[in-house]
Amino acid sequence: MKSKINNSTKLKTLGQDHLSCPICHDIFKDPVILSCSHSFCKACLQRWWLDKPIKQCPVCKMISLQSNPPRNLALKNLCEAYLQNTDQRASRGSQTLCTVHSENLRLFCLDHQEPACVVCRDSAVHVNHRFSPINEAAHTHKQELQECLKPLKEKLKLYEEVKGKCVQTAEHIRVQTQETEKQIKQQFTKLRQFLQNEEDARIAALKDEEKQKSQKMKVKIETLSRKIADLSGTIRATEREVTAEDISFLHNYKAAVKRVQQLSVLDVPQMVSGALIDDIISYTPVILDPNTAHPDLILSENLTSVRRARKQKVPENPERIYLYPSVLGSEGFNSDIHSWDAEVGDSPVWALGVFSRSANSEDKKCNLLKLVFCDGEYTANSSDAPPTVLSIRKRFQRIRVHLDWDKGKLSFSDPDTDTHIHTFRHTFTETQFPYFNSKSEIITQWSYNGFTIHGFTGQ
Image (cartoon, rainbow, N blue to C red):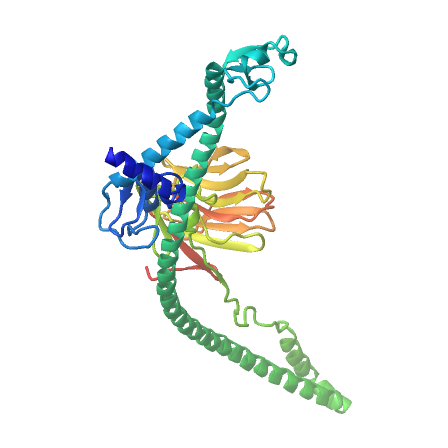
């Protein structure tokens, strides 16, 4: 009896705010208490801690040493008493009298959809109306309302699922940023060393080219100088013969004609082809975009190779490819000429090409042009045409992909033997991304002045 009096007294002094969970802001359900004395619904706390590396109090951020905190029975009893008291008040309120006839509302008018008393049933306002007992009508309408709530509950479930995925994505972004920052620093250290080595090598090659071409020009100039001297001497001697006395001229005429004829057969002098320095020094890197990688793929730290593995836990972002275990290059091309190499090695299954998504947000169509190797044969596949089996049977270790966006050509070849494999002809309208798909490890490389740079990323 004393306990009931104490609970009643506490309910008078405590409002709903004091009996509400700080997370869901509703009356506590199965409350648990942390060492910092803050209480929460058990389910709310477990959801709050989901995927968090450190279990902290949602209010004061104090670290909890217990992953399964004890129940707060005293608070649970208060909440149950409060809810029971609220239900009793609501039950008493439901016995409202009819405002017209001061009779208990025991009926429900199905036509007016409102409570009524027995006098209302016989009044002119409700002539020929259908009535139901109040408890039956309440039961039926509660079921109908519950049915109406089902779509909302399903929608709530979807919102919670998407929110959960967004929370996971946000955490992935944080971890991804840290890892990417680390990789950027490592790669730029390697890149600076590579660029220094490449600069030294290119300058040395430039000096060698200058030496060879300067020597070639020197020999050409010396040869031209000798011929100029011969021609000048012959011209001067012949002009002197022409101005001599007739008898003297005729005596020397045959010799003069012979000298002129000998030099007349000289070739017309030509400029030396390829004499100038080749100053084309641009290159196009192709690295992989982890945000597009299928969950079954693992990329290397330097994002230049990919291999198959068991399904990874990654965010479900719109850019990711799920149809095939594939990954795209990080940079797309919408003009000019680009080429890159892929080291496929002895992989039994692989596919290379270009991939594009429609720029129209309402059009989810994707276009893919690819060369596929499977079961020892090569197939040219296009999103808008049947696959074509190629007659080539040789196994290639490397494949060069050459994209001429402006002319609408995508070519595949073996860079080691300069063997042409296949060429697609297509009118490109969207940005084209390098496409990679392989059952075993595949390594991307760079095309630079027509040849491939190996070890660019320190592999």
